[in-house]
Each structure stands twice: as C-alpha cells, then as structure tokens.
Length: 100
Length: 368
Image 1: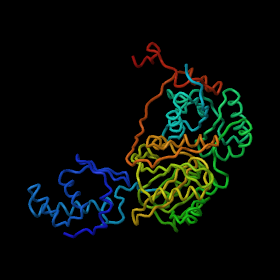
Image 2: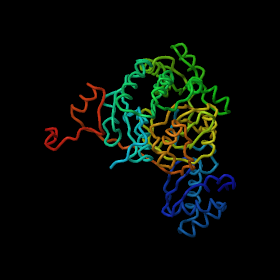
Image 3: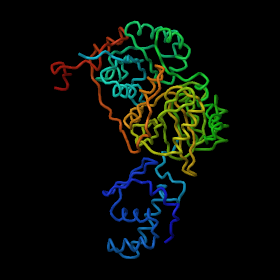
Image 4: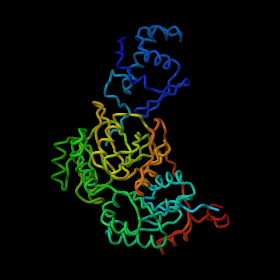
C-alpha cells in the first residue's frame, strides 16, 4: 500500500469531524458521514501515521482480516483523493456542478 | 406605541419564483437590523410578484413601469410614489434597473432619495463581454469568451472553443451545449428572449463558488461572504447553499471588486476547475444575489452596510463569517382574492403587508 506524503493530508487537518461521524469540509462546504472505521482511519491519516500502521490499527480495533483491511483502506484513501481531501488526485472536485 | 421608523426604504426585485430575486432577502436583512423602526415600500413590476403579497415583508406596495419604458417613465413613477409615501433610501435589486437609475440619479437626489450604485464605468467593466479584460488585469483566470451576433459567429466559436460550450444571454440564462445543433437551438432561444449579442464561452468543468460583497466605490470591499450552492435549480440558480472558508476564493473576489472600485452590493461567481484547482471568474452580478440573507445569518448584514453607505455613513465592521451556515429555500403558496389584484392593477398601489386573509366562510368551495 502506498504511503501519503505529509503535505498531501493538509486538507484533512482542516476538516471538522464530530464523534458521531459527521465530517464537514469548510473550504468546499461538502459534508460526509463516516463510520467508526473511517473515523479511526481519518484520525490516523491526519496524524501522518503510515498506512501500514493504520491497517494494523484497524485490524486490531475492528477484528478484520489482513486482506480486507488493506483493500478497504486503499479504497478509502482513493475516495478521499476523489473528493480532493488528499492530494493523490490533485484535481479534486468530485461533485462538480459541471458547468458555468 | 410603535416607535417612528428611522428608515424608510424602497426595495425592488421582490419575486421569489423560479428565478428568485434579491428583494425579499434584502428586506428581511434590514428588518433584522432595524426591527420595528423600518418602513418598507415594495416596488414590483407585476401584480403577481410574490413579495408584494408575503405576510410581513412590505408595508406598502407599488407597481413600476418596466425599465425598458425608459428613464423618464421610471423616474416619474418614482416621483409619484415618493409624493405618496416618502422614502429616504432606494435599493434597486435588479440588473436592468441600474443603467436607468444612473441616468436619473440627479433627479432622485433632488427628491432626497439616497441610493448606492456603481459608476457607469464600473458597470461597463463587469459586463459579461468585458470580464476577460478585468480578469486579465487582476491576474485571474477566466474562460475564453466570444461575443456572437449571428450563426456564423456561433459556428466559429464552436470550432474555436470546442464542445461542450456555454451559450449565454446578455443578462440572464446560459445553456451548456454539446454540439452545433444544440448551440444553434440555444442561440435562437436566448436571442429571442434576451436579444443580441449573446456570448459563447469555453466550458470549464468544476465546482462553482459565489462571493457576495459590498464595495464602497473607493476600492474598499466590505464583508465578503463565500458560499457553495448545494441545491441548484434547472436554471442553475441557488435554491440552497452553505458558507465556506477559502482564503484564496475570498481574496480573489475582493481583488476583483476592489479593482472595479465597485460601489454597492455585488456577487462574484467563480469556478474552481476540476482539472487544476484554479479559480476562474465566470460572472460579476451588479447587485446582491437572492441568497443575500444567508450572509446576514452568517453575521454579515450587507444590506445594512448598503443603507449606511447610502446615508454617507461607514458600513459596520464585519467579522469573518463562519463556514457551515446553510440555507435551503422553502416555497409556499400565498393566497388572495380578486381585491388584492384589483387594488394593484387599478391603482398600481396596495397598502399593508400580505394578502387578504380569507375567512373560513370565504374559502374556495372546492376545499370544503
């Protein structure tokens, strides 16, 4: 699993995240809901924890198997990129209004 | 005993329909600032302008001739209204009113009516066909835009800009067209509705953000509030929105409004391109948008600032608005009977707020 550079998670640090899983991006006004697994992963990503350690953390906390955790974490990071919240996809804007 | 109004204000642009106008949001913002100490004269163009009939919105209502009837007809009607019910401040809320009002500014001042409006030069610089010039001067990206007056120009724009492309009316409405056939249909429709010239604009995929602000005419920009539309109508208008905190967005909008030396309310429409994250200037609207009340609820009462500017005072010191304040519009029906319309259509005036309240024994029979 590829690691994210510290600068690429800067946007994540600006998110307002509630314990109930409500996530608000003040820069774009988008809001999301996150389950307990996603909240755990977000918290670790914001702290620059390496992906391998996040996977271990999730395995331990949610009693999931190795393959499933690695796959889901990679998918989650990809989704964050699509939403412009990490810079794996710098274009962002997944919910574009599509016109001017 | 009710205190005497300290502000008597006339506001236009009162219809909340498919294309919502700013007047109701302006009035609600002022009522929040002035409480019972305000008297609102509603200025409508049609007896069915919804704001003329909304409970608690206007205290007195009058119909105006459309600005297309020319400055003389417009100012004479304002003089008549002013002679009937004095007002000290006029807040025009429609784009098409500004060029007419600028031509009669001296006569309004002679009557003691204060209003805030951009100079003719500022207004010209933010017209849709001159935006690229402004954007370039400010170092802001903007989609390539071409003025089109006929089919040949449209075809040339299509070849140059490619598809999808945006075809825009001179004041309102835009279509995203996917090819030459759609472009021709859009051109015919918009030209018939709004006249020529139209504009063809490069399509930029991304997310739209809007910034509302108040310019003081000397390069000062007060209370910029940025928002993203969360609910968008078929016409591309905001039916819901949320405030956002984006320093780049706010600074870019502020730079543009300052460069125009804009005097009055305005809305800067920008698009953050999906491809590279850059902001593109799309449009500058020469008045507050219909979502102006969202800014007020986020702590930035810009209509209050506008009134203070009109009176030669300083606008309030606005704090940066918090992100996450949202609104969603809620359409309800307003009811009346023929007396409500009769009054407006026969005398072009209707006293009092809201519609005639139907008593239970007056309810339409079909409802019983």
